[in-house]
Length: 215
Length: 215
Image (cartoon, rainbow over all chains, first blue to last red; front, side, top):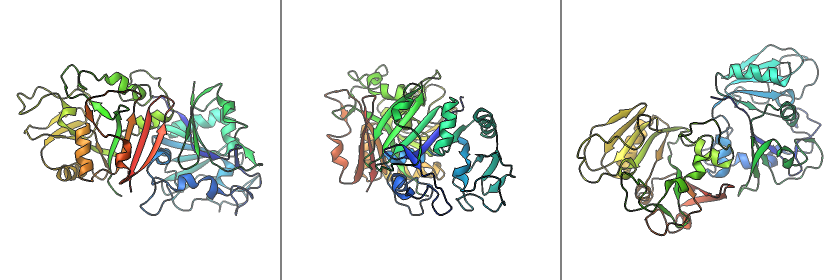
């Protein structure tokens, strides 16, 4: 069984922006980016991990959110997805944005050149690793015990793994929001067509799902 | 956690026909219905259970086929999905269409008024049960141990459970084939709009996925 490297539920604006450059503790997606607007499609679904009531839609968008953890055994994320700090860790108090019950439920490999001991919160363990994309993917595959590995973002991390030709499938939701400036995943989804098949699937919710798989 | 009753990957023609009336051992879908044409969308995907090579698409249609077993703990099927026999079982040699490794991997409840002992083939056990839809669903829910129950078809069985208002979600793929006569699931998908939300999602493969969930 192949172990895939999969991007899932990654959301960008119509102009390809995933987040602002000016991340802070208060504005994890940067000053001009409202994650509520980008991710409203996902928050409306029955399978959204943060849902606290029993409602939610069970149409197309829910196929996307309920596939998030399906056959996933580990995640790789960039340091800026884990937190707003830069440079050496000043202390180890910061344990990510997600509180005591992170929504990953697997080992998570956080890319950083600055050493730090692993943290376990409920059934998620964060490991802090340096190394090139291929080496980190090797560690994550071993930890995933035969299951697939999710590439969690942000955009810079996804581009690094795309540049190294390590990504097998990408699901990118393009939200009906224009952001103008920020960290861009792409100029256009067509940038990836040379290496990937692409299904473009408009959802009744207003987002357009882009489903890529390696040629 | 709610245990849903889910129809998945059920495929009909543009005129709502799922199978012919004249099922035989040689033509399980009836004389004028070629299942290869109806199901080619599913057979082309990476997650199709009968796939023997490592290829296949990983776009929209693959979300549908890979969700087939996700969180499913039991299936309910009509007798005609299990085999072409009618009336009392003449012998117990027939064990379904699927050989030694049926693609269900859970308990399966086959609706029949004619008694027969259960059969276990690999990790699938077929139970032969009489009773109204609500009673059979109760048995299947108990066997599913907290997971959802799949309603496997055929069209007559799905209509019985719809009439009893027991179905929570339906995924029906409408294939670009016109059949004219046969066993019909509906005159139009709009027939269900009074009780269900509906996302209509055309796939690049030519089928149109209809995703219903209860209002």
